[in-house]
Length: 328
Image (cartoon, rainbow, N blue to C red; front, side, top):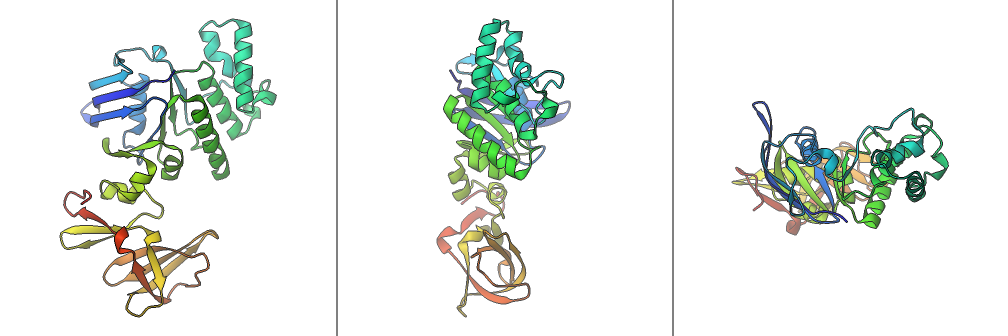
């Protein structure tokens, strides 16, 4: 059984510094909900408030219909996965996974059965008698997941669990975590500063800046209809191109600008070109629109110093208020 989470007007202060001034969020049962934003924006602070590790200076936190503001962390029925794995180095993998069950005085045979089931689901069976130091980073992360999952909590909290892994392993592990979360149906809150990770994994994403919620929506909606200029430029890689026209700021994503040969299109000079094999990013300078990034065809042959013409998809231009930076 999972939980719905309701947060109303949450406040977090450290002395005279207010980290989260006023935050309200609803997280649905069984949802993989991602907290996204730059370092220091309040993501982990909120996660620790939900876990009970941080005090709450204002507002109300509910699991289903139960207020949990003053509930001890151990009574919240939460499984946590951290960035640093937090495994016991002297314990074998079996005992690391079994530890939460032993603390709850499960019977030996019940522990053996449950650990065996979880190990099989995470492809850890052959490592159960090894110690963490004998495992790779991905294997240690799976052990941390297994330990969080073993007692079937109502809520998973994951704080940048993949940030210590190399790029290839991160891709593999985010697929595994997403597949497991879908299979278990457990409400999961996942903290990351990696927008690609958030877009791929999250059912919905909450974007933060300086402790203030900027927008909550599905990955597709965030990308296509950002609520403000910060979200528009934070989501997407490379970020949205922007320029000022009169009393507003306009923006367009790199894939909605095209290189053409037509003399009536926008003149541009190539400042640099980045080729990754799968795509080519062309950085150009224009007189009216300033510097632009274009997601060009991989076969594009332009090089630094070349001149070209570009055109924009007018229907894909975003409009923001120049003062409030809110979407118009």
